[in-house]
Length: 495
Image (cartoon, rainbow, N blue to C red; front, side, top):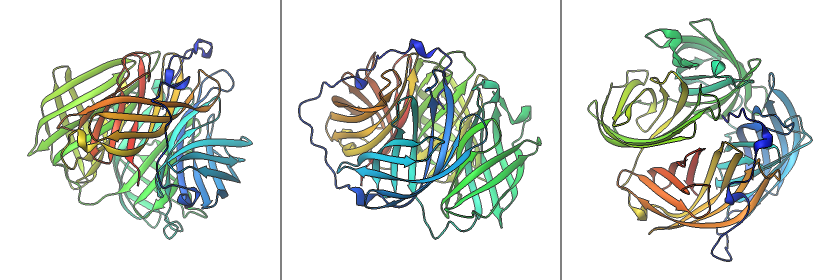
C-alpha cells in the first residue's frame, strides 16, 4: 500500500512522463483487442490513496463487474473501504477497449461516488491491469475473468494464501502480513497455519507459526461471500471474499478500521527447487516514505542457494546486490520452508509457503522495522536480449517524496536492445487524473539470470532506471530503482 505523511501542498510535477513526450514521432498502437475482448464476469481488486480532501487516506476496493462484449457493464458490485468497514454499492457502467488493449471502465454508483473511472490495459481476455483514472484518487489493481460455474459454492480444498493489512491511520503499529495455508470444506476452516508479522514482530514473539480456524459463508451472488479467520492469539480477521474459480479466491478485509487485500491459491504438490524470480512490497517504521519494495532472483538446489541477485528500495534508498550463498529447508507437507539469502550487504531471511513447485508466497522475517510479503515464481527458459520481444501490458504503482504516481499501458521490446513505452499515467501532482503523456523510448539489456535493466528517456527525475526480473519470456517483476522513488509492478506479454 502507499504511505504518505507529508502535506499535499508540497506536491510538484517532477516526473516528465506525466507532463510531455520525447517520443520518436507518430506511434501506431498494435494489437487485436476490442470491446469484444472484455466479456464475462470479472473479479477486481484496487488499492491506493484518496487525496481529494487535501489529506492522504488509504483505500481498498474490490468487486465484480459484468461486461457484455459491446461496451456495457450490465452489473457492478463494488465494496469500498476507506475509513471503516467496506460499503457495498451496486450499479452499471460502460467501457471502451482499443486495439492495443488500453481503454477505460466507467463504474456508475461505485465506491460511494457517483462515477468511478478506471484506466485499463488488457493482458488477455481473462486478465487486465487497472489504475484509478480520477483526479485525487491513485490506485492500482487487477481484474480476472470469473468462472461462473464455480461461484455458487464457498471455496473447497487446501489453499496457500497471503494477506496484507493496515490501519486506516497507516500507523506502522497496525501493519500486518500473513502468509500460510488453510484447509476448508463445507464452509469450515478446520486447520490453518500461518506466519504473521505484526508491526515487525513475527508470530507474536513465538518460535512457531500461528494456527487458526475460520469460516466461509456460501456466496449469495456473483461469487461474493464473507468469512473470518481466528488465530491462536485470539485475533480475528473478518473479510469479504470473491471466487475467481475453483483454484483462486481473493480477499478484502472487512474488520472495522483495518484495510487490506489478499489472495488464496489452491495448493498442489508444493516443493522448492530451481531458479525463482520474486517481488515483494511492505510498510516500514521510518517516518516519511514508509515503504520497502524488493525484487530479485535466486537458484535453489539440495538445500543450498547457489546464485542470485536482489534490487530493493527502502524509504527511498536503493540497494542492488549479488547473492553470494544461502540455504533453505525443504518444504514440509504443508508447503512451508525457510530461506536465507546471503549478500555482501547482509542477509535476507524469509518463510516461504509454496502453492506448488512453480509458485509460492513469502514473508520477510529478519527486519523488525518492516512488514513485507510477496510472491515468487519458478523461472523458465534461458534469458538473453532476444527473450524480451513483443508487446507487453504493464502496471506500476508508487510515489516519491512529492507525489503519488500510477502507470499502465504497453511496453514493446524489439528483441535486440530497444524498447518503447506507451503509457497512461495518473500523477497526484497534476491534479488531472489519468492522462496519456506520450511515447517514451529507451534501451535494455538482459543478464543470463533473468535480471534485465531498462533505461527510459525522460521517465523520472534521476537515472531513469527500471530493473526487471524475468519469470519467463512473457512475465516479469519491475522495480524503478532510482533514489527517492518507491515504484514497482508487473509486465505480462499480451495474448
